[in-house]
Each structure stands twice: as C-alpha cells, then as structure tokens.
Length: 332
Ligand SMILES: [Fe+2]
Image (cartoon, rainbow, N blue to C red; front, side):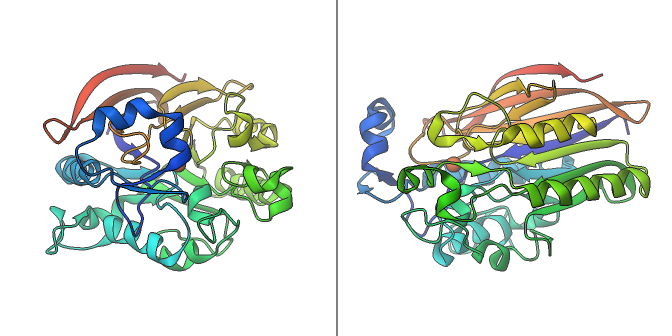
C-alpha cells in the first residue's frame, strides 16, 4: 500500500466539568469568549480550563466517520485537564467507551469503537496530581494501562500496521517529575514546562538501536507532547530539548508529532527533523479554534517520502469540523 493515513489530534483537555474556563486565560484571550459565548461559558474558575462539549461532540462524529480508512489515531497529549481520576476518567470515556458511533447511550461523545487504532502520549496536564499542577501523577498509567502500553513509564511504541514492521511510532513522555525540575519559580513553571531526562534518553537510545538492529525497522515517527525546539514561551518550554532533537537526527526520525501550544504549525528542529504540531481539538479556552489533522503518508521504496496534511477546523455554527486547507511536506 503506497499510503498510510493517520489522524492527529491533541490537547482535548477532558475533565469532570465541561466548558470550564480559567479566569487568567479569559483575561488573556477575551475575543475567544465573545466569539463563542453561546450561553455555555458560565463555568469559570481559577483551575485549569477544560473542554468545549460541543467541539468534543463534533470531534467524535468526525473520528467515527473517517476511522475505517485510518491506520492510527494519534493523540499527542493533554488528553485530560488534570491527572485526577475524575478528569482522566472523562478522557477514558471519550476514547474507549464502546457502542460509540459518535456517542454512547447516555449521549456523551465517544470514539471507543476504534480504540484499537488509538496511540497516545501523556501531556503535562495528564500528569497533574491536582488542579495546581503538582507534577508526576501516576494515575495516567493506571487509567490508560490498556492503551499506554508501557512498563517503562515513559516510552511506548507500536507498528503503524501490525503485520508490517517498516513504520514504527514511539511515544515519549517528558512530563515533569518534581517541582524543582520546572525551574524557579516552580509554582508557575510547573504548569507548562516539560523536561528531557537523561535516563529517558538512554532508554530511548537503547530501544531505537534494538528496533533498527533486530526488527530492521526503516521509518520512525515520534510523538512528544512538547515540541522539541525553540519557539515555545518560557513558561511552556521543553527543557533540554536539544538532547532529544539530536537523537531524532541520529536515528533519522521521519517526523515528530506534538501538541501543547494549542495552535497548529509545521517547523523543524535545529537538526532538520520535521515537527508537526496539532492545534487543540476541543480545549475550552481556545474554542472555536479547534483542529483535527489528517496525515497521508506517501511511501516510496519502503520509506516515508512525503506527508499531505489536511487541516479541519471546528465550525461551531454547523457543529462540524470542516476542511480549511492542506499542504505537502517532502521528507526525502
Ligand atoms: Fe494542552
């Protein structure tokens, strides 16, 4: 098959409480509120923003519509607003509740009929122990143990197609493990920063060597919630990102899928690896700027030669994600 189709979504921010906005975010982004104030944005809080329930409904309908043609559905992190069990439970329901066709019997949106195609990576919010971003909650590993298939805690992988070991996708978790790792003032920086830890880099290097030498894998896609490059504001940086960017170069990683900053872009690491960053799919503080991305990988001589990325934006007036443009990235 000369093509593989992936769906890339990110930053869904599912939560026990839908449509919750953060006071600070509202102050920073008042136009978003005025554009989308449909009588639902009544829940405001000093806690992190959650998800827009209408965008989530449209997201589920879109995914269920295109799922039969997909090799994988990739979620690049911030599945939930926090790593509290109630918030992760809401994300788990969306991603795995059965009998979906877009929603469950109770009317809640879900894409669970396609959970076997799901590949996920935790984001900083998924590791919050509480609403104040205390780091390194392990609840994600418990809640998603059937999807986040790792005993190593921080790296997992699978082949894009089970019977074909030519394209491997890996998810690498660089969420903070301790307050001090965020840097001062950690009370603020722990909300948005990630850090590349040396032990994770060692494990990633070992695993990549194994996949190249033993499995003879030819193509690698990495999923990292935090874009491994300059460009994020100080409060949202991936600290030590150069360590993982140089490893991506060493193993000729085809491209990196990221999220985190809630707006879509295509960029490069300082070593030339392509980074495809998804916009948020349904975060309340960005609505109606909610995005889904279809990635069609063109395969030539067993290598990923190019990617056609088609962007879909949520049109809150008609309740659907609609195509707004596409672009082609040449990789080789
Ligand atoms: Fe996020």
